Image (cartoon, rainbow, N blue to C red; front, side):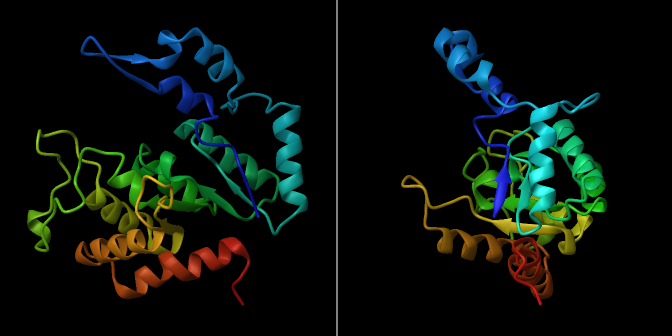
Length: 225
């Protein structure tokens, strides 16, 4: 019941993937010609201005004609996600999810803009813990001590950031998930338990949690009464 513009299949994601070589981050597209040819050159990109193109227009029209389907931005850039949200409104698409990969790099103001257009903002446990150098337990129950910086002082971006943004954007506009379940990751149920417990510690109310895990997903999936 969803159309997603993909994860590693987006140009924004694929073009930024790489590894450390001689103490310097090097994109895979520069290390491996076949990666550039087979992945980057075939990846999905969204025009951030000007004509949308026939293929994107066809996809958006299909979603619009099938209201039981929601649009997931996928791992595009923030500017691409904003364009998708704007276009979705033009096409009358009522159910849009801004993927957690976008959420993790967008500003609060950008997220508020997309939420104001009717999109739900996704936060996953994986995006704010397992894919960062910040350990899940790196906060105190006392909110004044809570920190999102890793032990080396890297820029914050963990669960504290997620909790603060959710409150600023509004729980009525957000959805939480885990992105767990892969064979190298924890069970989704345990991930959700940990995410909920952490958000409660960081100031999200029980009513807010219900919106994040029940009411809003029901609206996205067409299960609400």
